[in-house]
Length: 115
Image 1 (cartoon, rainbow, N blue to C red):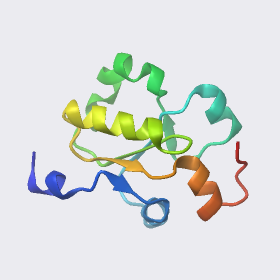
Image 2 (cartoon, rainbow, N blue to C red):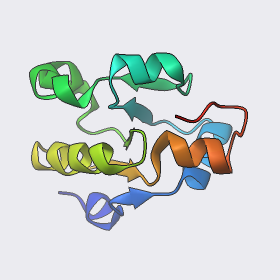
Image 3 (cartoon, one colour):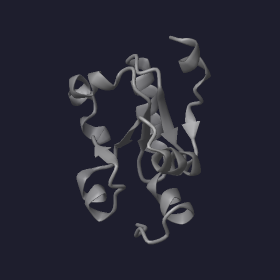
């Protein structure tokens, strides 16, 4: 691991992710909810890879190994597990978006439906 990855906190707040999107930072927003949840509400910048499929799609994610990846789900539980798992697979720049899309709809964009 590089020094940068050792210092990267496991968690990131929705406000920080919103600011990163606003600035056009180079990172991947990974949504690990299921397709039906994604269909209800999602962030347009997010790439859907459901937690239930993530192990089987690791090869697809391999090009992201050295990129900054922010993982989110509904409230943050699944994304936290996926963040830990991806770090164990060598993805050293992965963070969990605390509170998930629910926190996003409360704190960033109240027009998004909550479920």
